[in-house]
View 1: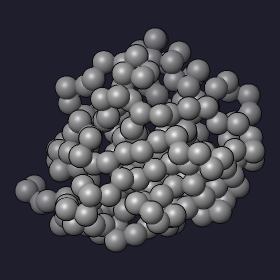
View 2: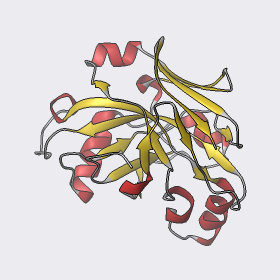
View 3: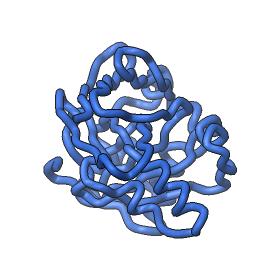
Length: 207
């Protein structure tokens, strides 16, 4: 488990192509779900154990924001966030599809232990650098996802304001900001590398 993690908010379907690749409608407002703090584990040359008997598991690479202070209305994302990481939103896809069909909460598919590994933090960049930098996920040495905040349906500012207004947002909360197209299956023995621009931030091996 990662230290000093409070709430973990996650944004679903925040990239148009990702929503479409899974056959989902593009949302008209941020779709927010939660993961327990126990889902957060270091993604730093770690061996990560995932459920073995729950059907298909998917990886979803994301930018992760760490909230540095309690939100005050009108606060900008640059004032609120001090550091960021890259993370993987592991999803039990068969379970998730079944829950959606039944209209049930997503927690069983999204909230299991080790479901939210994240890299070591880096300083949160200014807006220009954020928009100029892609992040990528490599699986077994092959790039499988590439994302950029410019391609998000809902901006980081919109996400922060939406979560704060409805649920509250405070120090040490994390926000997984959504995944681009390219999600796919995970199997034992797979390796993942997460890059911010050309900088490797974290790696893991699936046990």
